Image 1: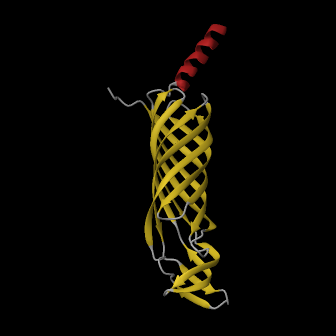
Image 2: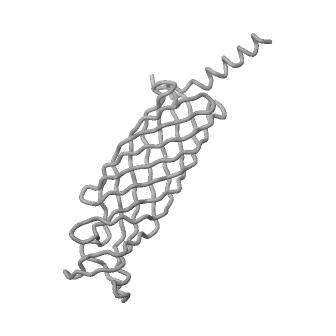
Image 3: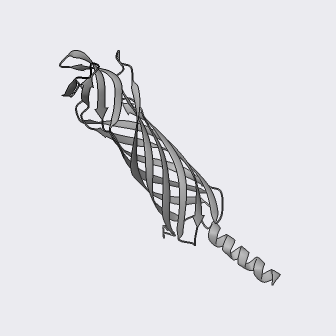
Length: 218
């Protein structure tokens, strides 16, 4: 019986540890908080506002070792309208102070590595870098500092799109149900350095479902 138990555990261990040469497709819905900066503080300074949102990550990775995956992932997130109050902007080349609102979305393409530090129950740690694109709606000054409704778009704050350089990290915990299916929970963060735009920080929490297989690469 002891020999049989050792054999079963050994077989299961090999099965669960067979992450090397394994390809994995993961889908991860997320809830997000965006910390969105805008140059509306007067004298070119930035003001940061928080906005809740949601997103989705889709990734494809390959096991270089039993404990190390490398892959690419595409993430997208959208946020509710962020409010900047007080904000100082130019409207028709004249300074105005009041409440500004704007909506931001973000898509990121990242490449990175994931440490997988377990067998059936797996702590994971991810770090990646990449590029992003940030579409934004036209900003609107809803009201000025006197409480008067304005409803105008500040100069240089019409709808547009900017590009980012991105760094991201994520920690989580996954459970492997069998040789093919894995599910998990994770917390992540990314920092986007805008090329000609202020920074964008995203905090996220997500659940994941992953499917793995062994591609015939040779």
